[in-house]
Image 1 (cartoon, rainbow, N blue to C red):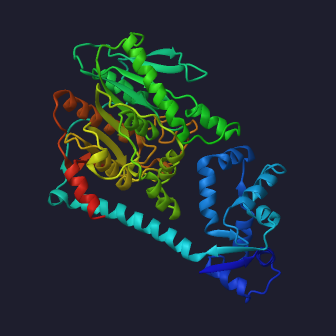
Image 2 (image 1 turned 60 degrees about the vertical axis):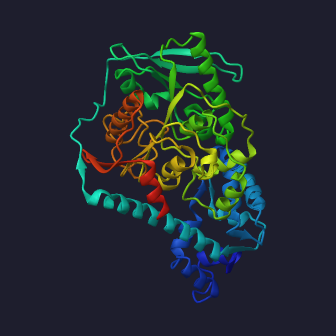
Image 3 (image 1 turned 30 degrees about the vertical axis):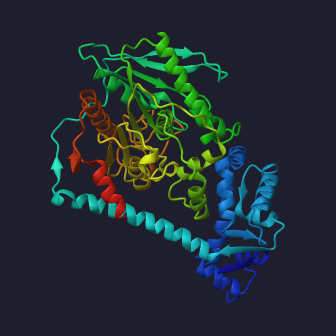
Length: 490
């Protein structure tokens, strides 16, 4: 079912020039605009506040894909390509600093908007289904262990550990125009000789200093840590997007990120990076976690394009990371051998479940420790952390740490966060996005990641338990058997 709306009548009606009992008024009432003032306010809402950033987003792969998908649901004179909208918007951006919905509609050559009600209903149902799955997951976890809540008395790690500092080095590499910046965290005390060292990678738009809290905690407990910044997909790239200088970075940065890792491995082997441990744990947040998994040598199967077609056809915005995953269809990744010195992968708010089918053919016997939150709107825990473990790892040591109330941005510590829950840099996000107080989540993450690494050194597994509490945080540590049972019934 499609609703045709005349653009001229729409504008006239909002200005009081159309009878209230018109057919258009009936349609607008159904769409939620029961008063002209509401529609007028909507039409005068800035669609674009910063033309430079908007232009760069629209030119990116993800921006164009979103526009294409929305254009399937809101057609201009039956044009589902979105080209007329994009061309008109580009023209307006050349003339005005701020573009409203009214500006766009008034400038379109199209005479009518056709709203695909069936498509929007399907999108709404997708959202509803995803919300029900999340709610059911929490309910099912509460039901585990006969609804017994286990309160761990262990004290969380302190927010600030001052004993260890890092050494900053620049690594000249052939595949980049600028050196890689590395933070080398060597434990000040060598009382504990660790078998593993950690390579830590931030996510898209992130910097190493967002994770100094974790590097410091790991180093304080005996693990050497190298924190790697990725030029072109760090906070400087995000700042360049905001200022309209560069497009929104996407999955096209992954090949260079993988080359960054190889450069660090070579520097370690040559002695430029002074770390004695031989075995490595790859650790990352979001895209950094996906980079770690791809670096392990696991290969994306040949059914990705078919899976992505279904995802994009449904306009599945309940998992924005699906766009990055599906972009890999158009990106050539070199075949990699399995890393012989890789002990484990730790992924915070990881994603990549669409890249592999849930079968043993594509899996690696590498322990994964994946962490996520029930308030993650970017990489939902059911489809990503839980689904990813089932898709990739066959190791009995693999676990998922699920923290109730934590979001995709909870692990990121920024300037000023010690005194308030909101940060002061480009990740200046409010509580509605960050979720439960991030410092508590970060402390829990450090504690549980260290526990996983301790067990890994001994070749043992972390106990799988549900309904745990530390302070005011509720969390769950899930093994493959529990995850499989939870996912099957979603």
